Image (cartoon, rainbow, N blue to C red; front, side, top):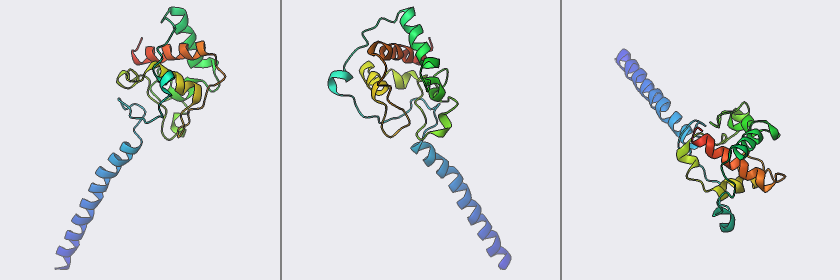
Length: 157
């Protein structure tokens, strides 16, 4: 009788442990999706209408895209790539320090759903509730060049 109760107790304990191992990681992943998740849900505040609806005034020329890439990779301190990664997947060397992790710009499904004006606004003003700082010292042209580069990352150009 004691042996049967012991076996039932072990089975119940193992079932509970298995349930926790299956359920808890799923809940954690839901609250803080890995940077590589695509699409990556975010709830950054919306830019004012006048900015939100802006379309990037710069042509996606080779020189504008190159300037955006240079800003992203090394010209800024911290460089965008330090957090978002060289290919924009949200996995840069500093990414693991942040909650939530940096946005995955390599995910076209996420990035292409964000208007140019919203991307501009986030670069200019940062993203409250995240580690994304404001880059309010950049010229408008530089921010628009960065937006071109973010679009290139999403489209793997």
